[in-house]
Amino acid sequence: MPRRTPGKWPRLFEFEDQRWLPCILRNQMTDALRYLIVEMKIYDPIIPEFLWVMQKSRTKKVVDLCSGGTGPWHYLLGAIGDLEEVVERVTLTDLYPNENALKTLAAHHHLFAYTADSVNALDIDVKLEGVRTIFSSFHHFDTAEAISILQDAVDKKMPICVFEFTERRLVNLLITPISMVVLFAKLLCARPLTMSKFLFCLVLPVVPLIYIWDSAVSHLRSYSREELQALVGCVDNAGTFVWEIGQSTSPKTPLKNTFLIGYPKKRPAATNKSA
Image (cartoon, rainbow, N blue to C red):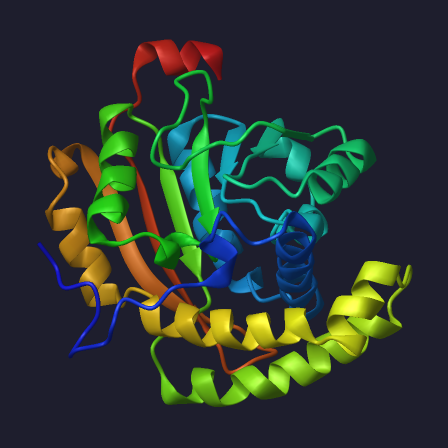
């Protein structure tokens, strides 16, 4: 089994993972992350990998896990172009759904649906069929959990795409405070300026402080390409899938996108009929 992190990094926690974190703070965190992803178009470089999996999987359905505040889907819709030629439905799910953000996106475009109920990426309902996507969240899972997520995809013959822009590099840690200042300055200028945003981002800067901590921990907890390869090696029947692991560079930031994609070498007849 692969090491969780190199050296002797402790198993640090993220506030966003904690059940006791008030919903109002968690939603502001996921909204801030979505704003960062959309403004900087962080996931533009991974679009070819996503389209490749959709093509090879012969399905037009997507189940997005750990959707948070809808992640990159808000702008991927336009970046991909003729999205309806590729996707007929994206179902957004999360363990702690940001229902306002999910509902808003679903209301603005018919391609998107969401589940208001809590969906655990470790226990996915068999009714949720389609290419599984995980943006900016795979590092939240420890080694056993990460293997379990990949194993479930293999067992149920569901393609999976993991995309992360966090990475254990010094430059990533150094830019975290800078990105926080820029991000929350823009958020406070964005409309509408709600009372909760004003209170917890400016008067009592709880959300920015949580953002700095969670961002730094996210970088430290992220899997390297070698560790992702080791995770795949721990999956039973991994040979029935085609796996690709790599990195792409975001043109607007010094951040790199690490991706892990996997899809069955041969799709089952039942799934082809439903697609």
